[in-house]
Amino acid sequence: METTSPRPLPRQALYLATAALATLIGVHMLPGSGGVDPVRDLMSEYPVRTAEPGVAYTLALLGANLAVVLLGAHWVRDGLLRSRPVATTLLGLWCLSLLGLTVVLKDPVGGPGTWYGTVHMVCTVVNFVSLPALCGLLWWRHRGDPRWRSHARAVGVVAGLTMACVVPFALVLLADSGPGALSDSALGLVERCVVVLDVVAIAALARWSRASGTVVVGR
Image 1 (cartoon, one colour):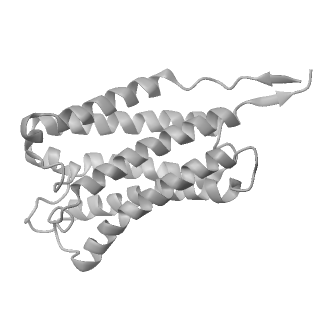
Image 2 (cartoon, helix red, strand yellow):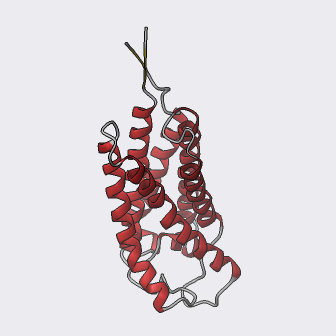
Image 3 (tube, one colour):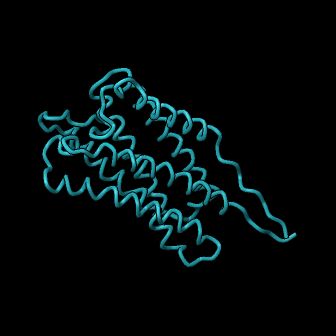
């Protein structure tokens, strides 16, 4: 028997993801966190409040989004998402919602509601739900498969933790759906936990996809 090696992950995606993560960490290490409280304020406050950190934050999200698009194309062609239209759609929704969060600004805290603030809010909901839904779907389908049980368990745990973090956002929205509802609450740290979990989810999916791309064939 012979094992064929999977195609390597696109290097461009790795470079973009590394640069994006370094930039996002960097804006949080600015003096005074660039005018954004990392515990209370949402990350989308960066482009609303300050110019230079806001530009860096926007470029980082665009780079991260492009990196996931490149990875997703690789997974559809050679890895985990082959012949999985529902899973591919969920990943596509996550990428589109992240793009929407990047290019459409939120409503300023205390300001009147706007159409673009509503679009930003919808993108927030889709972004928070789509990636854990993808991970939960893959966990459900492969939880009993001995080949992929450990990979499925890993993404399932990430999905569960992410949805637990989403609960506070849902409670705030149900209690107060007016403009700035999220920013008026101490949810910045929770949002940053979701971002970390998203990074872990993408890394776990990449590891699983690489393993699924390995094929055993007869000589």
